Amino acid sequence: MENLICRSTKTETGSIKMKTSQINIAISLDETNIPSAIRWEATDAEPGKHEATAMLLAFWDQQTQNGLSIDLWTKNMTIPEMNIFLYQTMLSLSDTFHRATQDKLLSDEMKKFANEFWEKVRQK
Image (tube, rainbow, N blue to C red; front, side, top):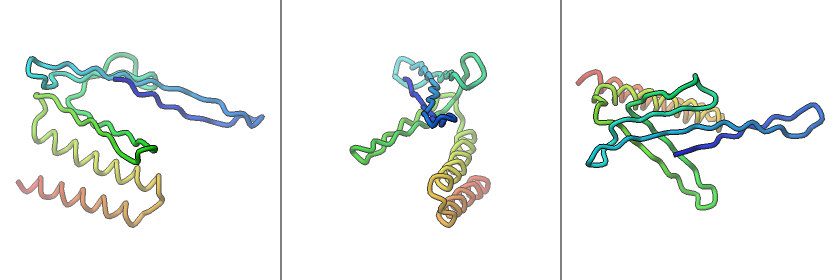
């Protein structure tokens, strides 16, 4: 699976200079098609393949106004790790939402929900 990220910057002459980054993701599956390993590498990351036990990847199709997500985790990921991963992801999404929309009120509501989730996890 491959995802290309492009960032543009304007030069002094006003022309657009494009930077392209590449992210490669490899998923190993067991005999029942359950992920057994997730490895990734990126041109803007530390060199080499990196291991992960879970990943969330989302795309927005502007033409169809539809989201597509790929959520995978390996059989080695524990429930406590999943709880932390989802909590951190919710906090990150609230930050992303705020940067994209400047809507502090809704961003704060998202963080409030994430923190309530975390408190319930800790009470188990």
